[in-house]
Image (tube, rainbow, N blue to C red; front, side, top):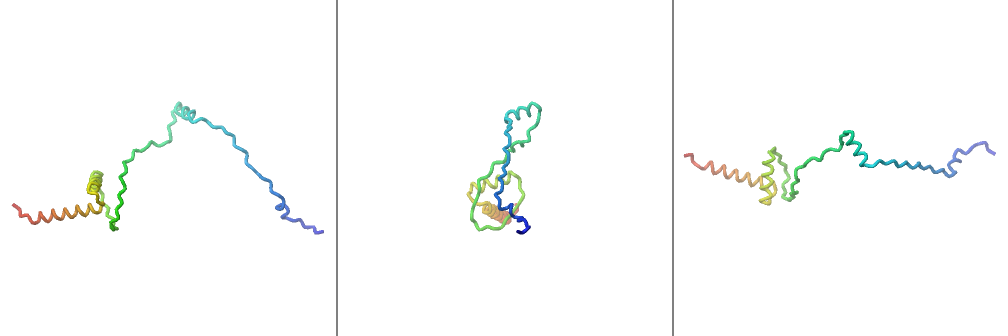
Length: 116
């Protein structure tokens, strides 16, 4: 007989199953919490709903334009630009091109006029 103890003998036995104890249900009604908060002048931590500007309809055109142009403008100017693009049913880049062409034509006509 060997005097050695098998250190893995415990692993051969089935392991006991452990479970957690169920938590006691002590729910407080939502109305009671709200009523108590109002009675004691506790402010709500819920943020007020912010009024957001109405979203524009998404404009998707496949035009081949791949250069970005940014400019600062007033909200009125931006709204006017989008309104014109929607009326003409053209992409924003095309409306910019049309406007620049019109400015060039107007500038050319002013150059050809003789001062009176």
